[in-house]
Image 1 (tube, rainbow, N blue to C red):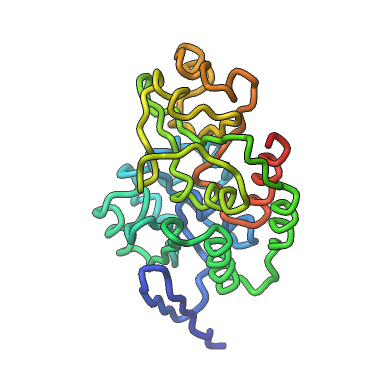
Image 2 (image 1 turned 90 degrees about the horizontal axis):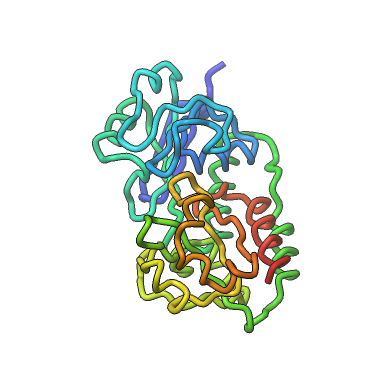
Length: 276
């Protein structure tokens, strides 16, 4: 029996058309986590400089073909992908160099989902729903109602100031611009008050000695990825302990690259609501 064709328009305005529905998907770690949660099998994943070369770091029990510019193309070939799914911030294949992106494109066609800019988190999640629905005939185990309920429970509390940051280096903290990151934008739209940032991009670089003065937040959302400084190194940075939220123990894990599902977003919002 001849298989029907498959097509998808990605966020580069690129039309991908194949002879049949892809069944062997290789994906960027964040996309792989998302697709797995939505019931789409993934044969392997690649990371970026933000991920250690282990499934534990990315939360995936799948073969990792490498990170950043260290992709093992022989391992990719052995997995025989018929589609590569990535994410993009500005049209690029995020997480790898252009040369590696070209190599991957030579092995299998690619689909990119845009996850930054003016797009809201629900809109990004809906794009992954569209892709997952195209890749699997089953119903998706992910309901927007869960996120709606979590947002309703959040409530506004303008007296609480929030900052989201990553422990960049021993001298500098990277403060997230909530307008840039969809999960933070979602909170801001729901009434969460973030300390003002001075960048239009993703991060404002602030020295640790200036952090408490510039971002006197009552609640800290801290980047949990492997490249962000851990608790042992933060303990030796005086400026960290001067932030009000750190002094009172109101520090929550924040993942700038979470699985893009309503279930994950609802759990994140619920965690913030419990400390807001």
